[in-house]
Image (cartoon, rainbow, N blue to C red; front, top):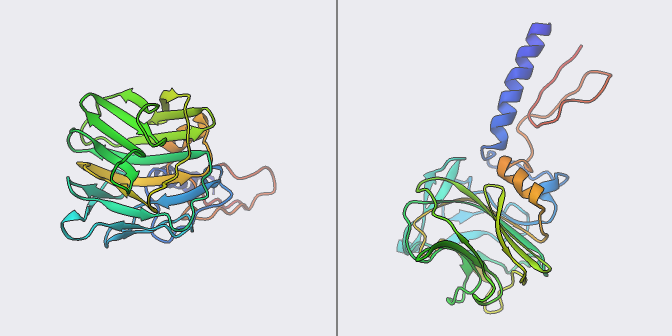
Length: 267
């Protein structure tokens, strides 16, 4: 009995570790009680693998639509599941017709990979063609530029040369008196300026404009995540989704070990 229990725990622990770092299957719901689900107003997981729409899993219905014809990005196998690949000229659009509920605090989290480095590769930008609200990487000079105040004067700038074909977990936090930039869960740069993620000219945001690479997932919050929460999202980017396996506890002492996906039977 003890040997069987140890084997079961080992298998479940392995499955649990794999789950948090691989995209959940289609149909898995967000666990609203999870700390990283609080304030989540947009979640585009990209686990469809086909079609021209990425569902907004937050429940707000701001779905991402691929560009038409030659402007359409394509589905590929990513590091954590399926991803959406962009070439120059490819874009997708997220309508914000259903209000994101953002006033003056914002967190944006995105998994992005570059196939090449070039000028003005925009991960996210507004849809009015001036791209003053944007997260982008530039090659002249080689740096990240993030600003949502309708201009470049107070942008967060961080010199960084991404390794090609390597997945980066990018996070941007906007709150009163602070705009912060994080790579792979680690704080990199900030500015004291701030403004809300609002779009006064249109009701849409553009992904992948001039990007030669892929986007694996995108989260949008109407609150400012802490540094520790951003680090946790890097370690467990899908931890807020319900696990594949439920947890049963048959013992009368203590509580089941932490972590999703563990199935425990004790007689």
